[in-house]
Image 1 (cartoon, rainbow, N blue to C red):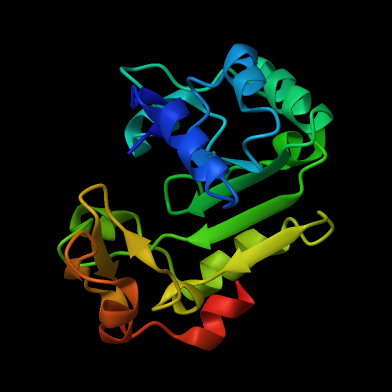
Image 2 (tube, rainbow, N blue to C red):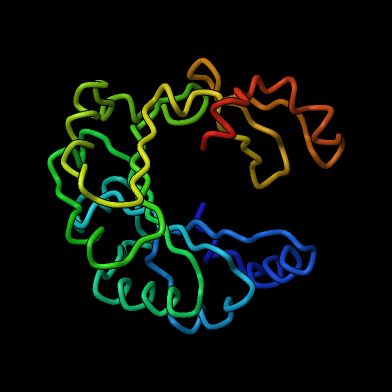
Length: 212
């Protein structure tokens, strides 16, 4: 979901920050404001913005919007530059599918001195997003798309194979989730079990995890 619609987000950030852990917030950018970023100075280490398209219609179809409102690119760039000036790292995640395959995101990537740009091949998992199968792309299509940005710095590319079993996922209910073999399943509740007792059941590929 979108963290910025959670009413207790700032309190949660304060709690995590005071616990001595790094805080990274991943958002779709539509609700981010300079006032919000100001509250996060010295508390949030990184803001990640999920931007798959610069086209309003495409963002609405993909679901990158809040109540029909998508990103205002000029406003977003100003806000992210403000965050960077206040020592908050900025990354952009772009999920690549047939819906945005022909787009060129260079304007965005070059308008901010991004600390990280991640291109992810759309992944279809059972019990999760089966409807996305119609927008899946071949490995060759994904490779061709990524080649457009070979001169962009701080670029990270994650293919479907790279994503497989490389993420530790905890859902809003506190359940540990795995996505191995293109199937999302619940391992167990971290409210009732320690992570050490459940993580070995999730089939996490440690090599991939640490490379990320």
